[in-house]
Length: 178
Image (cartoon, rainbow, N blue to C red; front, side, top):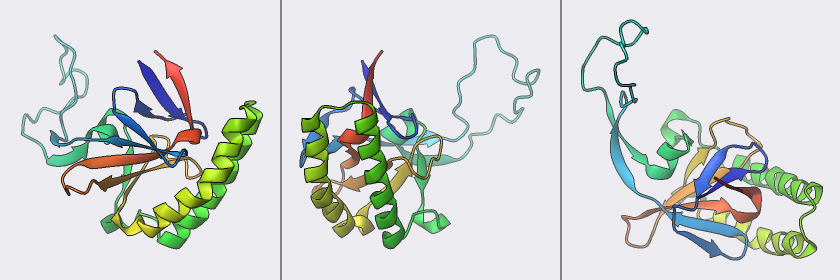
């Protein structure tokens, strides 16, 4: 199995268990699933005594919420518009400008092949333009560390209006075989 981490923050954000498609040579898209999850649906070790470990004595159902599988599996943080956390389009544009520079620097520091660096330089401006044109449709998620300079994962829906998919920067990911 391959886990992909953000080269800026080190957060795990994707795995090869998702069907990954390359788009415009610089972006990856992967289909997600959306499902309901109980907010108190944490695992318990068999034989553990929750009350002795400061656990909650309430055995209530808890709140149910819809989550994306990528969000749940990698503990991504959703920047919700209604909570005022989703950046404005101008703020996101500024973030992308800074992010592109950081990714380019990281690629050069890590000794990436010239073809890979040139591919990123050539494809990034068109990808940024495409993302910004569709920005209002995206849900924005961040990695677990909440590093503002790191990759923001974008969630949108396919043409069928039902299938969610995530968009990530291909060159902003490092792979680790597990």
